[in-house]
Amino acid sequence: MYNKVYVEITNICNMQCSFCHGHHRPPRQMSREEFALVLDKLQGYTQFVYYHLMGEPLTHPLLPDFVRMAGERGFKSIITTNGTLLEKCGEELLRAGLHKVNISLHSFENKDGEGLSWYLESLASFTQNAVKAGAIVVFRLWNKDSDGGKNALALQALRQLLLGEWVENTRGIRIREKIFVEFGERFAWPDLSAEIQGDTFHCYGLKDQFGILADGTVVPCCLDSEGGIALGNIFKEDLYAILHTPRAKAMKDGFRCGKATEALCRRCGYARRFVR
Image 1 (cartoon, helix red, strand yellow):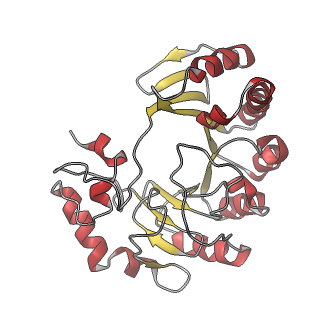
Image 2 (cartoon, helix red, strand yellow):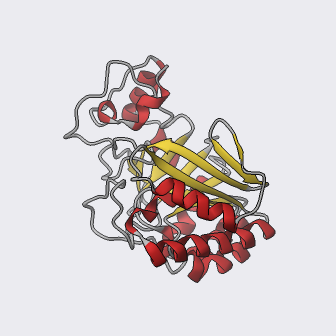
Image 3 (cartoon, rainbow, N blue to C red):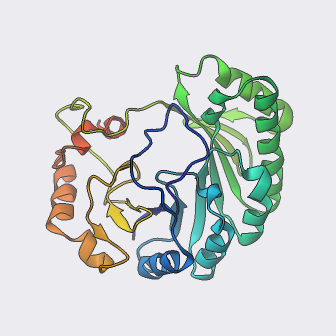
């Protein structure tokens, strides 16, 4: 069993955040039939479906239906979002059975003044409703030392909007039950044009996670934005066979030995945090 599987139901986004690597693939959304096929093939591989690679999942008009479909098959749905569309469709997602939402709060770097106030107020309102519905909310601030001072402003505003204990822990802050803030440093996305990141590598790709792009391409992790390490296509091939190709096996064996067999992996800044 994998701890999580990332399913990119759409590679289309409504924002252009500076921290996001982006991609150059043709715009695409999964159909209802394609998503149903993905869920059928994921049976026995994971309990947690993450609607995230590239793209903003809330731009997909069928997302609430997808969450319901996943729940009917025994999966728990976790969404990573910039949060700007939660005011519009958040309630429907909660009724559909959303388990958890990760909000990339650092998306506020594009907002000032009234725009920032509206953004934070809408997120706080959604969070209150989410907790009542039993969902978990995590505010991500993965931009340490590159926030231009806005992190403090955002947290100060949220303290006024979301009452709680606001207790610091090793990962961030526990605001209260089911509401958290998670800190992290901005990282370098894997890119073939980047420099090699070191001599020793470790990654959880293909160990506790893998990803599925909007066109069905199976990739080893959630950071392969261009599908550079294409292992197969879930729409056309058996998933077990895809995950046990010689290329996939070489990657897993390599990481166990502290080696990266793929050029893209050797240029991943995020993976450096797992090297001890």
